[in-house]
Amino acid sequence: MRDSSDSSDSSDTRTWWRRSSRVAVALYVALLAGGCSVLGPKPEWTSLQTPAAQFLVQENTKHTESWAGRVSWFRPVLEEIVGPMQGLERPIVYLLIAERDEYLEYFPKRESVGVHRSIDGTSIVLVDASQPPDLVVATLMHEYAHYYFDARQGPPVPLWYEEGVAEYAEAVTVDESGVTIGAVSSFGIDLLRESALMPVPLLISTKQSDSRYLDTQEAGNFHLSAWALIHFFRHGVPDGRQLLDRYVEEVAAGAAPRPAMLRVYGKTAVALDKDLREYLDSDHFETDAYPLDRFRVKRPAVWIEALDDESTQDVRSLLDSMKRYYQSNEL
Ligand SMILES: [Zn+2]
Image 1: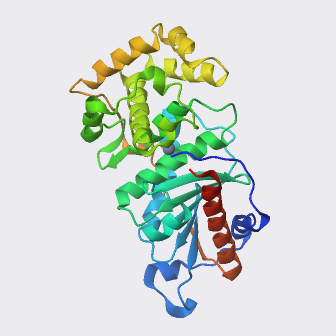
Image 2: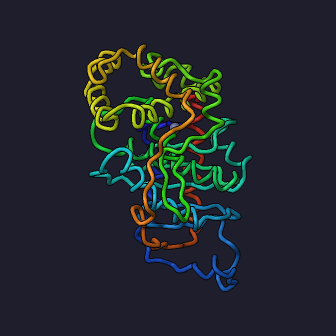
Image 3: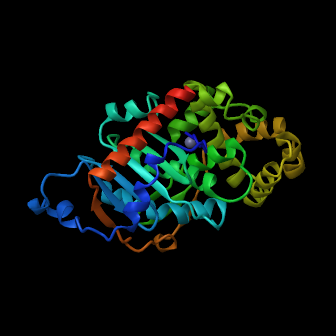
């Protein structure tokens, strides 16, 4: 989900990532590799800094190094989908919470497993790391897409496009044979065919304050429908990628969604809705397949550091500010 307020928080939450990125690296690799006891009791929080992102990892969180490696893939995959990322200077920090109950203390939205917020120029992503690893990876990817759209220069893109791209990108699959973008979940397709598909005119005019974006059930349909429209525009329309870029550019520049759709696609949103429904009835969906080395990222350098008491206090303040934000906005 998206939640990208730019409100600043109290200053005590601001310094910790800057400090930890400046500190000469304390090598706690041994701690992770072998549980070395020289370092004393396990720290409550550990920082994993990679070139792509920083991870603040709560004690007892598993798989963190492999997740940190996967995030290094996200940027080139997303660039393949949305185009080059220029001027992306803002840092991204993932906060990985080990237990579901504790995650819900900070972000008490029962169906959520991750949320992105922009605080004082940094993208903060809170993640419930107790979920199955595949779901956590998909969440890291989904929220990375929000980070990208939030941090990039230029006017905001349409909401359905941002959520659709985030859903589309998180479904990337990687195995020995290569990287696949655009893979279809039969479960999702069934839901769309049965009832979940939101009419295109409604989908493209949805705003962040609308109940169909905020309400749990409707938001599920909104995300799935946004994914479907991205898939259709990329794979089911001639010159689909160029047309989609043009449409997004026009709307971002202030054009009304429905007239822009007619201009770019030569069809009304109602006619495109009919086309989309036919597309979803198909029994074959195209995907984009790439060789592994297309996105091959060298094993990223990872700096691992246990947070000291002061930095741990800063993380707690940050988590408290997430909680207060949730309460004050009744998300
Ligand atoms: Zn989202």
